[in-house]
Length: 112
Picture 1: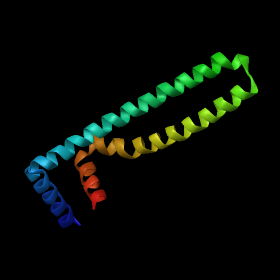
Picture 2 (picture 1 turned 45 degrees about the vertical axis):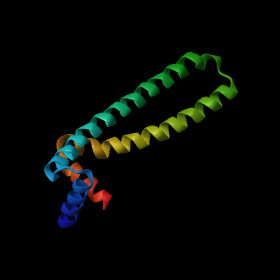
Picture 3 (picture 1 turned 90 degrees about the vertical axis):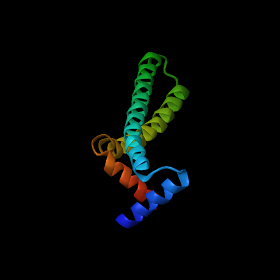
Picture 4 (picture 1 turned 60 degrees about the vertical axis):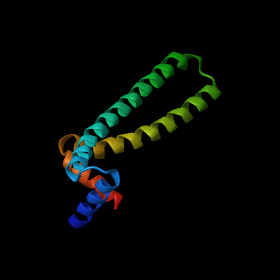
């Protein structure tokens, strides 16, 4: 498996016209970029969650049945998207932040 990874890195480096160590360095740096983008997207989802809760409290006093149905559907859709994002963050963030070499290697293995 290690030989396949090395071969994949060499082929990718040749296609891009760069040296293998440079390509590996870029992949390791990409781990930090992925971690930061995961944190940023999680923050956006949390802000949206707070906004939805605020809307529920503010407009919850004027309840109509159609408003409740629309709001409930929106919260269910948002909840599902939030859970998918949480799963992504839980599995990628620690690896990308604390072990970027392993993250880069797993990305290469996923390309095979």
